[in-house]
Amino acid sequence: MVPHLITALTGPTNELEQRILESLPAIERWFRLEWMEHTPPFYTSVDVRNAGFKLAPVDTNLFPGGFNNLTSEMLPLAVQAAMAAIEKICPEAKNLLLIPEKHTRNTFYLANVQRLMQIFHMAGMNVRLGTLDDTITSPTAIELPDGTSLTMEPLVRSRGRLGLKDFDPCTILLNNDLSAGIPKVLENLHEQYLLPPLHAGWAVRRKTNHFAAYEEVAKKFAKLLGMDPWLINPLFARCGEVNFTDGTGAECLMSNAEALLAKVKRKYKEYGIQEKPFIIVKADAGTYGMGIMTVRDPKDLMDLNRRSRNKMSVIKDGQEVSEVILQEGVPTYERVNDAVAEPVVYMIDRYVVGGFYRVNAERGIDENLNSPGASFVPLAFAESGHLPRPGVKPGASAPNRFYMYGVIARLAMLAASYELEATDPDAEVYE
Picture: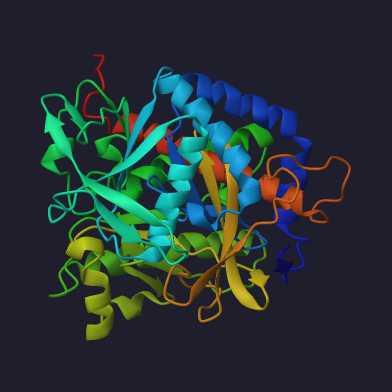
């Protein structure tokens, strides 16, 4: 299924697409050299927005759920990438412990866990599920809608190792983003590989650090292609002490929103873009589409109604929001069956393994689509999503467009790699 693009893609994105396709050998070599110096996150998903005049990542998830939304045709790519990832870390690995989120009643999420188990099983691992849920004290089967079931088991900790009863893994894969903090049971594991590392979780990670790293990557990449980094980079600002409940920090929000909108307006003017710019305010930590709002006028931030304040004040696992990122809004002009859509690209190790469109008929082009009413349509990676067709007019063939999405998503993944290196508590500091 190829999306219906209602933009006449004659503006910069068409030029950008052409430039990316023409620069393919240089781009792939550039990535290859970057990966010689940096370690990709174990797995990543990136939300991309295509405005026609701009193409940029707006969110990068290091504990991606949603693997169940990838089609079975995408499985071989995922399995190969998983093999490559494991081979680098622990070539002799045979046991993998997968630790999922605690909200074990969400059947869509459990289908994602099941798909991850399938990928790593096919990559040659014995995979079992350990849960951080203290109420599970013995192996517990959880039924799935398709009649199959998953068995959650209590974790067993001994000195520097973590496993299950009669199951000693070489590698522990977290599919839990640690929004609620870092559990004691995961700390000080010296003899096993914990992936992603603890500082990739939302207890430590901040979106502003990620987008600062992305800005650095975007500048390098734009220099390689001889273009303006703004075409692939959403501008942002940060407010560090905000309390939506009592209104503290409203001035910080408003002054930053005004400054950011002024910057975006200047860019729109430079490129002759007639749109009205907007910004997105969201929690600096956390995910699941919670704690996000669209701001079209900074004055709106001064008198938020109670409903907006409540929505912004708490995110997943009841965590209070005190730090926010203000991000340049990138409208999306992609449509699937007349509903607003945005591509989400999935990667394991440094490889694009597939993706889908997040579609939401109840939302506008300038709103967060990761909200109730969202559905998922697999990207048309009918041919390899990684390889464009040379000689085909840009935009005419689906794989061209998806190659471009894959490039932007890999830039965001590289930024995540920079970010994790910069925030690694165990990194050696050289004076």
